[in-house]
Length: 376
Image (cartoon, rainbow, N blue to C red):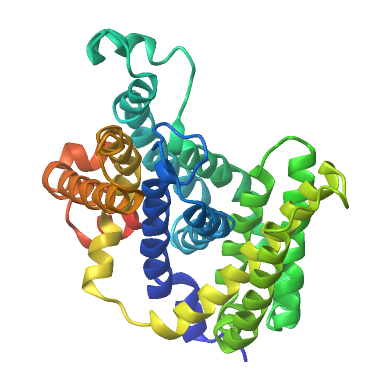
């Protein structure tokens, strides 16, 4: 299949499946943070009682939601790059990332640090100057990573447009085996990054670049949807292997270093197969541009910036209720969702300055709205 004009449109136009996936992934991040006080892991606010079942579910989705979000960010970056000169793209993209980031670090993040320090005997205004003693960006680290990835990926834009690279990708990455083997690079990056004490930086960057690679080649992009059943079965098998390794205590059979290496490997494989399966389903289900999805995408960046602070503040009061885990969890979910949406709709969306500070664009015109949607 040759790259005709319709294929070029696929590479340069907006993809409804990306818009839908972005909304679902941000919703997943929101739900994960709502569940954090009740999962048992240390967090800003913790409930006295926790749920092991909830923790067992959360650990599964932890492996995939952020890698997939970086993939979507890379894909939409490529789409925008084809419309804009490289350095113009980089300048605008970095401004759209870093101005809201700086504002949020000064205004949105400090309440999380304050709540984490409670009980203290000073008011928020008195404590505010000391909340920056340690530079902590909390959940906004994702924006930091995106800013770096924008810069580091610029050379890739030249490479991906080379005829030899295009021919190679069309030959190998249109096969399910080729796409699954491509995920091996991400597996190696995850293990190598953990060994080098770089955490998951290299791993996330691989997903960002993978988004650019797949969306840059229309034939490759379509092949994911064409082989969705294969990727679905692969995800089911990997999921069973993941939990088969997760539940038993294997300390008597392997050293701690070996067990951690296997854990990183399985998490990376799970993330890659989940991405391919989800993208394949999205290409069959999320095929039409829908006004409500586009409206949600317009405010997805402000929602991401605000949501964790709202959750942390609300959780400080919710965990004090005389109730079980489930009522508290549902109460925190409802309160956090209503407040975050209300802030986006009532405080940010109507005002040009607030839209600018939260990265939602400076106006209501379609071109600006489209540009705003490709931030995260």
